[in-house]
Length: 180
Ligand code: IMP
Ligand code: MG
Image (cartoon, rainbow, N blue to C red; front, side, top):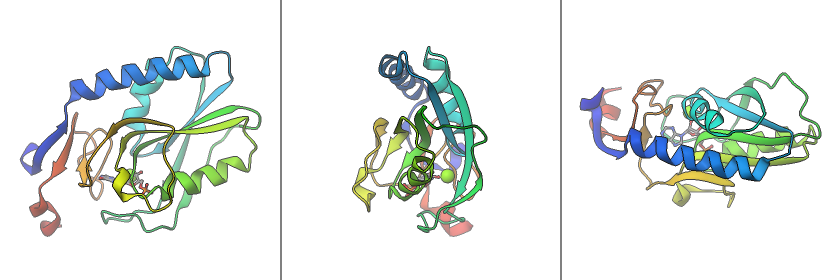
């Protein structure tokens, strides 16, 4: 897989260290609150397993599968839920976790859906943020890394389903797009 990567943007060490910091910040912010984290599968699974273990608080963990992407490299804008949360979040403090915020469409759409359950609060966290690409002015409440407008893979992030298990985040070689 490494030969398909043009450049390593974030090393495993940088990612792990930053997630530890984020965990401490979140633990301070959510102390004493009934916390439910909602993990957007598949991409956020890698980030979320590290982040939740870095938050030293009681919490519930829920998973959602949403899709809008198909196999391309930008969002279709039409977010569909394929697997929904299974526990009641009404009155709970909800933290929505994704691997990356790009256009912002996914967070906007899923946040709207979760708000219908009337949580006590709803915040978002993304490991990476491509702020230049935002279409809706929405920002994540917690961000691991601001990154440039390049298509990245690894640490859960995929291209057409591949590369999620890379232990770092890297920029894919353009020749890979031409091949698939
Ligand atoms: P948004 O809805 O445009 O904000 O995109 C969020 C979703 O797009 C994430 O859950 C990712 O699955 C996907 N995505 C956006 N940018 C990238 C990227 O550079 N690499 C891999 N997936 C990405
Ligand atoms: Mg994805």
